[in-house]
Length: 104
Image 1: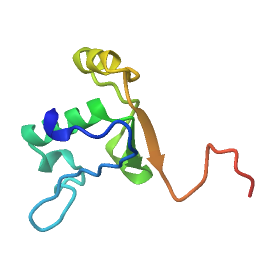
Image 2 (image 1 turned 45 degrees about the vertical axis):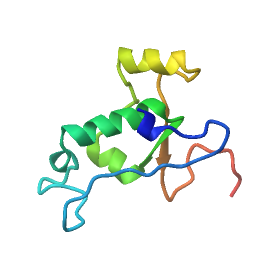
Image 3 (image 1 turned 90 degrees about the vertical axis):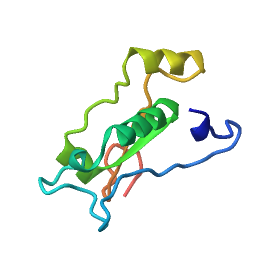
Image 4 (image 1 turned 90 degrees about the horizontal axis):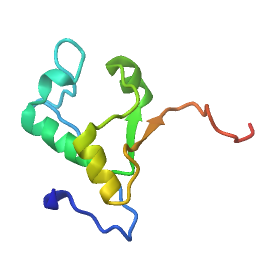
């Protein structure tokens, strides 16, 4: 966990993903789960535990079947003990502007 610590007084953005040696971000079945192992999943879990928000592309959200982010009791307890909400906010990145109050 210490390896992923950040300065809480400064804004920051962390990008993390898994690729194959040839740069693919999905396995033959079209999903990313097939190219990550337990160590990758452990890092993803730690990063989700410590972040304010998790950004996911709209296409990935639809294809991978994302739902609300739920970290589990142990990680939720850690977040609350460190002044964070139980789970991070899910931010969907899209080329459309839905769900905003911006005028066209």
